[in-house]
Length: 207
Image 1 (tube, rainbow, N blue to C red):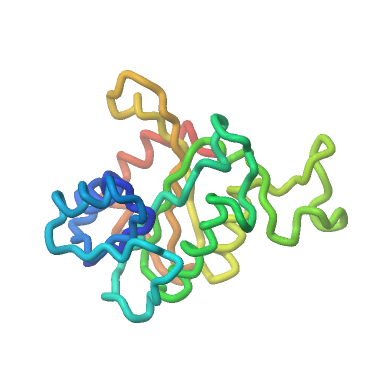
Image 2 (tube, rainbow, N blue to C red; image 1 turned 90 degrees about the vertical axis):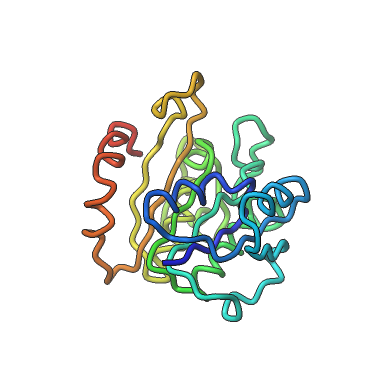
């Protein structure tokens, strides 16, 4: 199996997914120069397409698994909380969404900050009172809802969970949200049997 990596950073998520599934990384998309140098050192010969917005994903090597942590700056509690909107860095989720549409992978693994659960979103739905209305005077749709809704629109079911770095033994919290998405006609039994203990250990953090 092959992995395609978006917003790759230094490749940590790719290493974890590769170890879990046995798949090899076919290509990266990482814009920043410093992490791109790290990727080149740790994944020699693996192409880095850099600017995700300029990639025609129908022309790259086909992959079975698509991974990525799209920009979190507008979702994070440490930022200005602009939300998942067009024109924001976190709005680059739209490129991740496009890649899923064009590649049609068997498995999508998305990572982001805890703010994904609470940051606002803008996809033409949240201001329609008769559809969702508001919550405490604010639009009810949140960023994770927009992401899950986009996945559902193109035929992907999803499971998600929150995991702290301390759950893996690190001396700090660093809470992260992971979304596992797959075509709604695809059975996850094989994947689940290989990772059941890992997912069960995070069940108490399900959102």
